[in-house]
Length: 319
Ligand code: AVJ
Image (cartoon, rainbow, N blue to C red):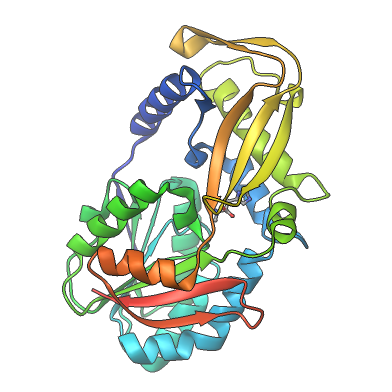
């Protein structure tokens, strides 16, 4: 197994400082969702995936379980590259299918979280002895060039993580990804689909309050990493469905007026009572929109699957 580090602790610390300064001085205040995922945040996310209200993980797993064999046959991939690999849990369905099909030689997980990456890559390296595991600690918006060269690559971006991008960032990401692939290579994209507002909001505002804790965790990350003094309990979790832009928005709403000190930035930030800090968008998609965006980026969508109730979509596209 090989692990390339393109993001050091120092790079991450600098990026967090830059994002926090820009976001906390903007109107409205914002923080990018990638900072949810410290060790505790990653654990909270794993708990979210098991909540009764949070259907996307189960729905995507159902779609992949039913169609992994076909994905292996159509792509005959030699290398599986996973962007934002996290625990690489659902990816095993694809590894198993490609392994059975007989073409797969290499697995390349790429993730910002080096501990999560190391754990997932080590486990897969142990469970698939004849697979060459080449892990990359990096950011999928910056390090697509670090994907090892080759042919017969299948890049997968699962979980609906593409929904964290705004439309313009999404277009740029898809174009950048297309540019690193050779014609005939493959891209498999998981997207959560538009559905009724109640189902969507419940998935991001669960009754056990795990998503609320996940949302507040970004404040804990700032407290620890930037020596800030946020009182996370003084922020209410907000999840709303924007029916026009077709995305879920998560925010943290100040329950009282507050002044927060971010010592590492030498910055004081005031919150009015009820002021909202924007922490995440999670866009939801329709089949035609996904195909149009992939086509605009230079991909050719060739297959489309969903789970049986049609909650989550998986698109296979050719570069
Ligand atoms: C990991 C980005 C796919 O948008 O559903 C879950 C993150 N946020 N609950 C999503 C998340 C709140 C998740 N993604």
